[in-house]
Length: 110
Length: 526
Image 1 (spheres, rainbow over the protein chains, first blue to last red):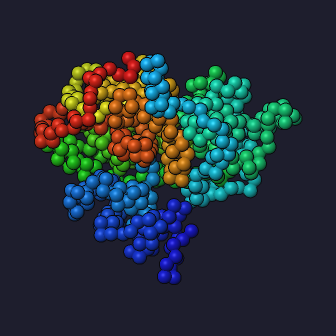
Image 2 (image 1 turned 180 degrees about the horizontal axis):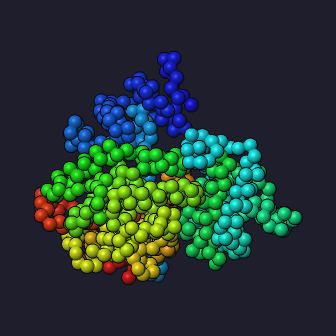
């Protein structure tokens, strides 16, 4: 199980989450997004970048509410809400956006 | 004539019976199975990394060990008389039509092997008594169908012998783990709790940042400094809650509700990063050792912080594990204040305050909600609350009625001790099992549709993190908003009147348009 692009091979698990997060790249994100039927826009990148920054600091993805609060600050009220997040990432901002951002899947009762 | 016409019109419109028995579809769910646990996840929690060579012998030995230790399990395997009372009681059978999801058939997957190796008749006349050899196909069937049981125990309520399929399914999963065929979702999570302290893998730094962020939200909302304290030594109360309460929606709103109640009462309380998880997935895989490990973390946190009481947040199976097993797994808790239940449920705590008239509510804050309540299976059938039988049914409802004007029960054969599982319990809340989760949720969704049609119900409350996540995922497929699943303490949070709170009357009342309210405050039952 691996993503292949430009002669690079990046392993992923059964669900498409990459197993070595240091191998992530913007190019790979585009490929994962395509698999998820998502066309990456600036708004998608805003979320993905925030997730990656947060992960670097805390070794985990942020709570959905923390993500939304930050997006509200950067993109305004119209986009900083749960509905808009699901519009961007129909399978849920936590799981789908994490996958594209190269982060591990949030586990537990979530 | 008129009457007949009305009745016909009603049946034409009537939603499907929540418990309608489907046509049989043998093998419909044979391909459903969870992802296997990796060697790393298996070994971390004490199981072989992959299927061991002598799996057959080991599996039989383990089964012998389990029936030797648990009289209950042996009785369950011995006593079924094939009366059929359970056949239409499992939500996964009702949703899938697969006859192997009839509880008796699920039990027989293990029972037939037990008979073959542990009973006289099965050893010598296997064909006559439905005894089967343990083969690879049987092992595959176990892996598939014991992961289509949410251990909700609904079937056991209807069994004249009280056979508990949950126990059988836990035993089967324990055997599977022992031979190296564990399930990824549960086993990865148990490992995370053992190293980090919670299912999510939320470390102290991240947990602290999250709680501070939520404190800010609370201050913005109320103008008050409402704390979500972490690792405070000498606090009176240790709150142990599912880590989903720190992460997911609507769970977080429940956490804010607990915090508001504690704040209003001036309680000294704390969360522990070491025991930042109420869930105990060791129960789902039937592993006493793993269950104990997780329970001991709670004891250690309570001792180190020097608390006097332990209160559990809204989490279904966690309350079963806490109520029924915490004391035997990690007791005695003689260092806690014996004047309070050990442990106590957050609903018991809040209910007690309501009874004493210690809290004030503005119920109109929940007037945009017409509410029903989903009894979470492990609370309903695996535990109790308060000091009277049935407290686990009445206490949550009493809280809801105290904070919400419009409450209606779902049909009686789908609530309380007859409640349906949400479809995601027992370690099945993982994406690759979405098909069986969806099918298992169907009876509950139909029951909800019934009260939506009859009483205009818009929201469903639950006190289990799994139920909340499962419904947030599936309600939109049934025409409800994702946020129509709510925490009990979210509704408490909406309605509670806090001393010194800023009033927020700028968000005005324009949400009255949709009801030709028949003014009936009366509930679905008395």
